[in-house]
Image (cartoon, rainbow, N blue to C red; front, side, top):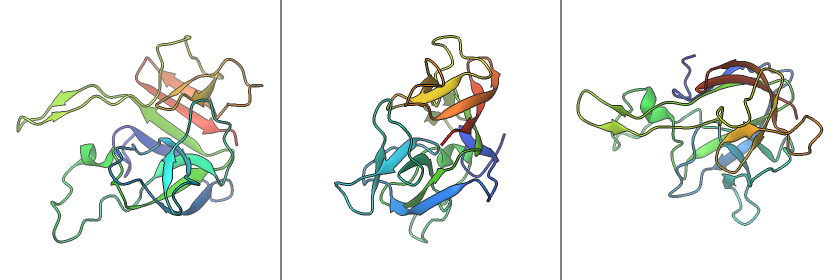
Length: 178
């Protein structure tokens, strides 16, 4: 499950024939948006992204999964990135990409709070709610403004993805529908 996107999000299949990467937009200054968050182009701030609203219908090219591939690149004046925990949150006011496209397969993992060997505490991260509504393989996911959640049925307009694998309440794989 390891990837260049941290411990909570990554791709299982990012087939070039189905994936769409939209633009080079910046994450908002002061933001704490996580890799894999559902985002959209912010019409109020040209060149920036914002977290998508609750139950938004995904439109490829406008909405999608937040990916900041250059998150590990630091200037010579910044502390070097040392491990996967640092990759979870996208760097504010830095370039990012919106990933979309029906068929893109991704994974989401919830992680518990961890006290590191040096005493630093890494906060818990929830990417997908796998405790409400008994989600199972074949169910659909929507975005509630904070995390992905089970959708009532696949005919609703707010469907983002379909679950293809699930493990307890901490891990799932899904395929984007739009």
